[in-house]
Image (tube, rainbow, N blue to C red):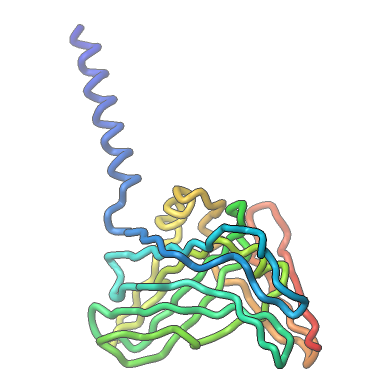
Length: 222
C-alpha cells in the first residue's frame, strides 16, 4: 500500500513538471486576424470562394529586451511591375534603449507546413518603438501567396544601446509552434535566403530539414 502511494505521488510530480514545462509563461502567444485568404494577382483573384482567414501569431518572449505587437505579413500586387510581394508589419516596443532589432516571420500553408522564414533588421536608436511597416518586401510566387494561411512572428535578436546582444532560443520556441498545429523544427526558424542573380531572375533557397535536400524556387521579372 505504501509503495502504491509513493508511485502515485511520483506520477503526480512528473505530470506537474511536464505541465509547467509545456506552459512556459515566459513565452506568450497572441493571435490576431490576418485578413481574408483571397488575394489579387496579375492573373486575377485567387481563393475568392474561401471563407478562411489568415491567422497571425505573435510569440512574445518576456526575457527579450523588446516586445512585439500587431506583427505579420500580407501579400500585395505591384500593378506596375506585375509582381507579387510579401509585405511585413509589426511594432517593436523596447524595454530599454536599443540600437538594432531583428524580427522574423515564419509562413505556413493551410496544412501547417512551412513555406518560408523571412527576416527584417532595423538599425534604429530607440527607447519607445520601432515600426516595421514598409521596412522591407520580398518577391513571391502566386502559388505561394495563395497558400499563405498562418504567420508566426517573433523578435529574433536585439542589440541594446549599451552594446549587449540578446538572441532567441530556437529549441525553446519551436515546441510552441508545434502546439499551434504547425509542422516545424528549430532549423526552420532560420531565415531563407533571397537573392537576385541576374537582372531578370530572382530566386530564394529554402533552409533544408534533416535528411532533406535544400529546395529552391525562382521567378522571372517581366
